[in-house]
Image: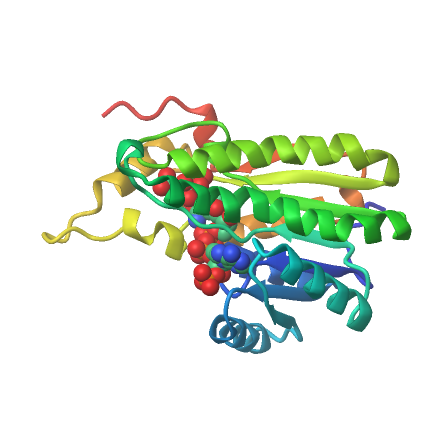
Length: 263
Ligand code: NAP
Ligand code: GCO
């Protein structure tokens, strides 16, 4: 019997007050995991706790900025003492800045790299020693189609997500012998607050050109939803994927395989 259950497991999903992180955390909870999440301020943590409560989930929420190594180390120590060793880490927290590269400041570039790449490094580094002691662990990095492709205005994001793909492969390489599996999920274009600007209706009520572009480029002919990521994250968090390591699972409706519909 293939085991997709997560009963008795502690799962940390970073930046999971809403959006993709919330949906993945709900899926992990539905499979039996105890949910821990963080956000950068108490208002979002409280909002997230309320959302989990409404979904029937007794989650544990903490204020923690994934780029602050001291804060992350205190956060992980507190969770480990009060709730238990983190068995499953989903590095989900992330931002994007859409600015033409020649207009982007180095500080803006660094901020995206800091949150989207340094953050997963810092949090993974904090949980791996506990996973080694426990004899197992699952690390799931939320990559992107921009781990594979570039496009105008997202240079920092693509650099970060490309780096996150290789960090995933390196954690796999360095810690596989400790029964730690590190994989990535590469969502396609998903309807969340992060992509809301790309889907805004035009003044005349027509669809945003980028919205139409993505639908034409996606074999599924639709944007993804956070719910589309629920099954993949349970698979990678469960014993069902114990021999899957260093893999980026693209959940993109087929967009990476398709040249796009002829206009
Ligand atoms: P989102 O709606 O913008 O949510 C991002 C979450 O990360 C928010 O809860 C945010 O908290 C949190 N966060 C940001 N900076 C943080 C920090 N320094 N420390 C802790 N938490 C922080 O994004 P999403 O669309 O759900 O995306 C989630 C992940 O999927 C991201 O890594 C994104 O790059 C990736 N992704 C998204 C798509 C898509 O199409 N939506 C596709 C591929 C990959 P605040 O609200 O407090 O800022
Ligand atoms: C963008 C989008 C994408 C998605 C996602 C695609 O501006 O192109 O925000 O980057 O967020 O990462 O996989």
